[in-house]
Amino acid sequence: MKEKLARLEKAIQDSEGWETSKRRSYLEPYFQEVYEKFRISKEEDMASLLKLSQLENQLTERILDVSQTRRPPNKNQKEYVLEQILFYTRNKAEEVYHCNLEKDSLRTRSKDFCLLFLEIAKGLEVPATMIEMGSLFGFPYPHYVILCYVDGFYLCDLTYQEFFLLGYNFKDRYYPHPTYLRTCEIGGRMLEKGRMSAVKMISLGYIKVDSEDFQIYCDVASSFGGVEPLESTQQYLEKFLKTIERSSEKSDRILLSKMHNL
Image (cartoon, rainbow, N blue to C red; front, side):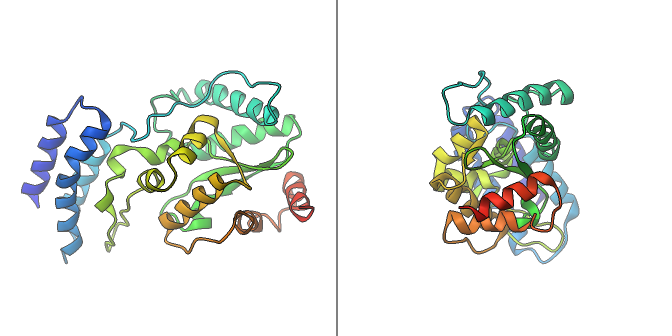
């Protein structure tokens, strides 16, 4: 294993500065070799797992080069109020958390961004709630999104770009392990199934719930969590709303009432 990890480390060093897609293709067989070794190993090798994680963490470029929309919202758009909220949320997030939305992965920041969104949405009287995707779809860690209603239901994922880091998106990364669940993240799956849906979510920050983009987004989330996909956007919306059906929050009650009026 040490020799395979050493070859992988050298390959990472040799490919520094390369264009991301070329680098991904070059490194794929080196990662595949290491993942296969872990897959067939019967022994717990924590030192090697730690080294592998360190190597993955070096690859911070994104496999989908999309910027978040930062221009002020257009008053003629149907989603004007929603885009207002996202515009102010993104500006405030950079100020409060000292992050760069163009460069940073935003990993572990999804809940922080959602709380900022809810604060601004409340002031504009837009019904919105925070949904934890980890428990909803069986992710190995929590990820928070927003479900809101602005003349229709919308899903907002303010840190979706965190799933597209190169180091976590090699196809053979998925394998069961007694200590760690390692899996090719949503980014690689999304590029294969719905690249333009991913572009919309990252750049705009939202997708309409009754759209094909929402269906693709949720199907990929299902595959990532290892659960069966649902047949329609309506079923996915019901799944989201089921998580808040016992809530007494005003926004949650409004969202539920909007659902029943569809």
